[in-house]
Amino acid sequence: MDFQLNDDQRAIEDAARAFAAAEFAPYSAEWDEQSIFPVASLRKAAELGFAAIYVDPEVGGAGLGRLDAAIIFEALAHGDVSSAAFLSIHNMASWMIDRFGSAELRQKYLPRLTTMELIASYCLTEPGSGSDAASLRTTARREGDHYVLNGSKAFISGAGVSDIYVVMVRTGEAGPRGVSAVVVEKGTPGLSFGANEKKMGWRSQPTAVVSFDDCRVPIENRIGAEGEGFRFAMMGLDGGRLNIAACALGGAQLAYEVAKSHLETRHQFGRALKENQALQFRLADMATELEAGRLMVRRAASAMDARDPDATRLCAMAKRYATDAAFEVANQALQLHGGYGYLKDFPLERIVRDLRVHQILEGTNEIMRVIIARELFRQ
Image (cartoon, rainbow, N blue to C red):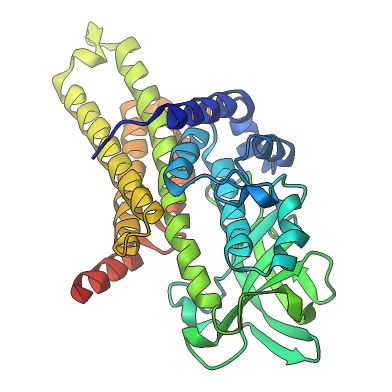
């Protein structure tokens, strides 16, 4: 059991951290304030392989593992949580096409997805099916050599801007076995988008409803066989949960560092705040929570790389723990700044707003507990 990063992993981490410091961090506040989707910066990240981390090199991917991805996303989120999180979603959609798509589908889309010439979104959640994802109602009726899609998806990151939508649709019976996955291109007749949602955080990426009204999609755009979509979606979410947890840790690490600097430089009652033992204890707890969350995420990522049968349980545990811990660390960092933490002059209020959704998406932390308990009783 080796807890140290190897030379390649340290180089990857250094590259991602340097990129985030140069290309994300200086603009993060502006992107948040003005709801700017930083496509040019995301494409620069793609030049380093960060848009296709675990996609096959044969189609332009980096061919790295899940542990490498966790390291990268934590480093990127240190610069901007929202943009790093969108890259995670793009990676997940691209991975699904790479892992389960036909050779023709892979060649059709992945060379342009890996560069982010094409931007991808992942469409599972619906207005009436959130945590109960298997009850989705968007239908795909087969008609000749096309599927005809009807229904809608909710809370879709990149909606209206993305070029490619990996969509879970019902092609058969009720429940998970009736779900299939298809790729829908922007501009397809019958595909439309709602107004951009006004969100608490993640303001640098658009989020909207995606609607299908007799939207015709070629059968060849199906990923895998009919009825396999829900399994693909759940496999994608195992990795997505780790990426989101890693992003949460990156944002919380920045909040911790800002708080530590504040305790070192701020004086009250004739001495530096860092000399107050109560505040020392609080900072110590914050550092401990970050370390524990990081270990859990990287342990689960290693399990995914090893195809460990316990990977789903470990991913759920890591996501639940790390996102809860990261939000609390960021919130405590804000508290340590007093009134200054509440101002937009400091990054803390933005980090708190961005991290809150990490406890909700890719499966709420309540659903993580359901998954963990289910897996425990299978043993």
